[in-house]
Image (cartoon, rainbow, N blue to C red; front, side, top):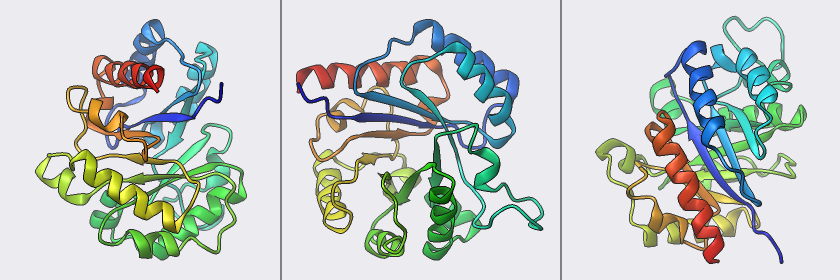
Length: 237
């Protein structure tokens, strides 16, 4: 039987220091049960990555990977305050690029995202590229010149994050179909005010390959509940 790959991605944003992150993973490892075809990705803060990558490796969590929340658009060199992709390639498997909060608060452009993606791909990491409407087409077209064998597209409507109400599943499916016309064959995940108690309908949308959660990933209980709901949805397919 063909196993369709699914994803549950947790973005901790600007939360948790090293000790908190380690405690989170200790509890998660105690209760986590891997599911064939389901990849769980967690994006902690930069200050946690080195120690946490070693700890997660020692835990031996099957199908669990770390992601960086952002990366420099430049290689290693004289770029004060930057973290180059080459510096994290042994700590993570994925890198989040172009999150709406980076665009809004740090004024990053689609060209910035394209440069970051180029750096990520060059070192062999997988980009998780964030897009939103009404700019999804221009955001994705900016990436066309980059040869990436693997890429996850995370669709997150800005409105859903601002008003904290998720976009209706049918609308998310419609946007996913639109994205697939620009970047065919790429896994698409939805993110935007998802919680354990409202995620179920999104897991059943055939156009989506998973979910991208923020606040709900900060607590082990809610994040595990989402992973378990995804596992149940996969059994039903």
